[in-house]
Image (tube, rainbow, N blue to C red; front, side):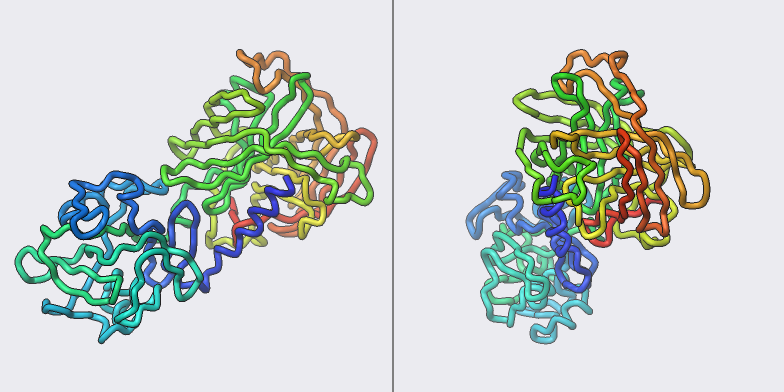
Length: 454
C-alpha cells in the first residue's frame, strides 16, 4: 500500500499547469496553449499496425492525405474516438511558406498552425534543427516518441490536390500532392484529463448479487487507486490494493499488492513497518459511467467480475477531476482520506457519500500486522458530523465459485465519528475492539488538484 501511495504521489508533478506540454499518461500529451491533445507516439499507426494502405516508400507508415485523415478519424485511443490530423499552414501556397513569420512560435499559434507550432515552439525547432526520433519538449520536459521526418496536416492548399505538410528534420512547410505517402500524427481538441469519465466511489457486483465484498476507486486523472475488500481462504476480512493506469483502449491496468503493517492500535504508528508483495494483476474496463468489469489474477486464480456503482442513498454525486469546485469548499466527502502528509502511510479510509449517509471502508492491519478491514454506515447528525457503528465482516473467499452471500456475517466491533472542518480536512474518532484513537484526516491527492464530487 505504501509503495502504491508513494508511486502515485510522485506522479502528481506531471499535472503542472505551467508547462506548455503536459504528460497526461496513457500515451497522451496535452498542449495547454492550443488546448489540444497529441498522441505521444508520433508513429502510432506503425506501432499499432493499423496504417491504411501503408506505403513505406518515403517513411515507415506512410499514407496518402486521404488515408491519413481517415486513419485519424477512425482511431480509438486512450478511450477517445474524436481524433484528427493537426491543422497546418494557412499561408498562400508556394514552394515553401512557413506561415510562422520565418519560424516564430507566436505566428504559428496565431495562424492556427498546430503542426508548425509543435515543431517551432513545443520542440524548439529553429527552422533548420532536426527534431525527428525521440524528442523532449522545450517547456515541460515531456518526451515525444518516434517522430518521422514529415507529416500531413489536415489543411489543404488552394492548389489542386495539394495539402500542407511540415518537415520535422528542418522545419520547412509546403503544399504537396495528396497522393504522396507521408506520416500521420493524431490530435484531438481539448484536454483528456478533464474529459475522462470519472469512476470514483464504491463499486460491487450488480444488485449486490455477491453482497459482502466491494471495491473502491479513488480516481484522479489517468490513475485509479483501487482498494479491494474481500476475504481470505479462511473467510477472514482481507484487502488488496492496485494502482491502475489508463490504457490506450480506455481500460485501467495495474499490479495487485498485498500489504502488511503496524496494528491499528500502534502508538506511535511506524510507516517503515509497512511491507508489500505483488500477488497478481488486475484490469478495469467500463461500458459506461456506472457499469464495468474487474478482471484479475490473484495468487494464481483468475476471475472476471461484473461491477456497478454501489448506490444506497440519493442523490448520487457526480465526481470531477480538476473541476471548478475547490476541495475545501466541497460538502460531499467521497474520496480516499489519510493522515496529512502521509505521516501514517500504509492505511487509509474511503468515504462514499450519498445524501446524508457516508459508507466508510477502512483498510488497516490487525494485531499481527495482517491486512484487515472494517466498515461503517455513518449518518449525518449535524453539519459536517457523521457517526455510526464499526462492523467487522467475514465471508466466502474471493476465489469461491459460486460466491454465496448468505455466508457473510457482520459483527459490531466499535463506533466511529467523523467531523469535517472543511471539504478537505477532518478528524476521525473511533473505538475499535476497545481501543480508542483520534486521527487527523485529509484527502489523499496523488494527481493535483484531485477529484471533487458534488
